Image (tube, rainbow, N blue to C red; front, side, top):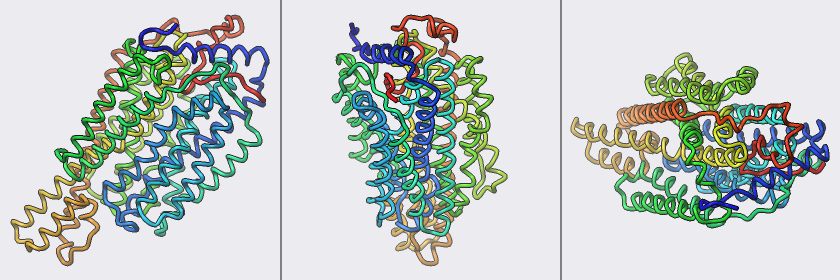
Length: 563
């Protein structure tokens, strides 16, 4: 029976029956498990390439489409918004209809979105492309992890599979900016979407032919009310943050957007406490250790994901680098995870997630503070060390989050804890660019308006001053840096670029503070729950109903596997 906060008995039962079915029928054979893991790894690579390639393109989009800072922020944000909001429905659809089918749908949506981007003639069509591809990304994220979990018979096999999945995620994060920069360096940014389109088609066909199907053995209902309320909340925060950076935080539309976001969040909590099968099991947040892991998932991913976006603006617009030069500076952010994989794999089995999270994210904070102190047009040698530090912090963050969440709750709630943490990770990833990026652009806009006013007092012709202030109020600092204003551009453009750098430096420092707060929370509150640990030699002897205990899943999805 479910408690007053709603329950997840259905999800837990599904995990139990699924694990028992797997063990009893021997379907998680090495060949089947290997095919599932290969497809899942390729799926997450495709999704993350599509997610991260925009970080190399701000300069190219600004030059080609004359996009403002706010429009570029929407372009970079919409993929994550669609991913986060589409993930939960696709997870349930995978449980009911088969995760292989949902993966195929995800590949198709990513391919369609990439095709739309290839044909885009303006920034608004590019927004549509990002939404379509982002929905596909949501299907790939949620069902790829659930597929490999369903194919893993032991806790050790699950841990290894999830670690490989995390490395694939990092590979996709590294490949996206690199391939986009390489193909767009000569000016045609649309070419960056050709590899994504090709990979989505090829890997989708491989999934169709070789991937086993997996379903949940217990049907569960979808919380449409909860999904709608959290979607409206996230959209309200994104709109208020992005538009507030350009129109001002006191603009009535911005204030209304934030007010509605708060109202929808309150309604979501009220709804989730009363629905029989909620999106989020609120009772988990009464466990301090789990709440701390969830908090780190939210703020840690937000701070990290904001970094490549802000670096793309900094390198591509402020420093004037071409997309390939931008990509070369971003690749180390994620490639570190691949390099550290052997070490992290051992530590995950022997070191408490409290220390891995609490101390492991400190390099991320240090890197963010360092990036916020770099001079204008810093050289590659000045940038590489703080970027590598951010990559080290990300490696610890992404590999230990799920472990920290699962080990902080009673063993029978491990599946629900993992799903809830993944939900918050995606939401944090979604809000990263909108909120932290908007903080930087808002500060930059304030700097450029103040600087223009001082130039007016120093003799800048009044017509030019009014034109520049009008551009700043309508399009922000990025527009001021790009619109030609005759001879005055020799003074105004450097002012705009310096303002953009100073604003982004401020946002880096804010992100660093947020990571430090997350580290303190993890060190103080995150504890392993002894009841959540099952020894490997107990796998074969425990009762079938304990199958959910060590099953780490995405959105509580698990089930039996059909070869």
